[in-house]
Image 1 (cartoon, rainbow, N blue to C red):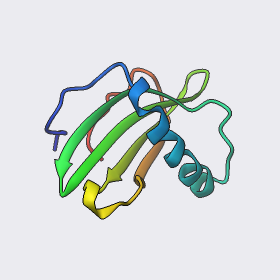
Image 2: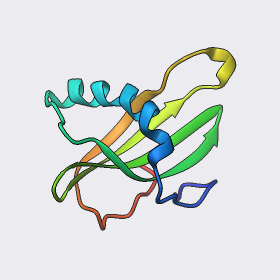
Image 3: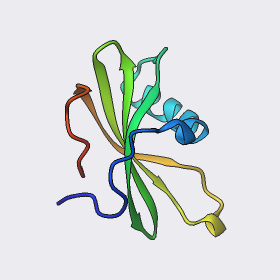
Amino acid sequence: VGVKGKPSCQLAKPLSPFLLQVKPQLEERENEVYGLFQAIEYRTQVVAGTNYFIKVKVSDGTYVHLRVFQSLPFENQGPSLTSYQTGKTRDDPLTYF
């Protein structure tokens, strides 16, 4: 199953404040502190809110893929890390998981 909606976006800088809210969620789950946490690309999937699939660089040559759910604005909820994959590389495709 592919990610429907917007095609992959290379420039992920607009996600920076959003990503800062997700970083501690991943660090807690992985029991690790990431000095580098830079979004490289992302995709979106519109559901009852939006799923973001984000490729994040966490060290030289090491990436994680995040699936983050952002509820609809009227629900007034922050982004929630719903799933993630570690051990990724820059060349791994960003797909639905």
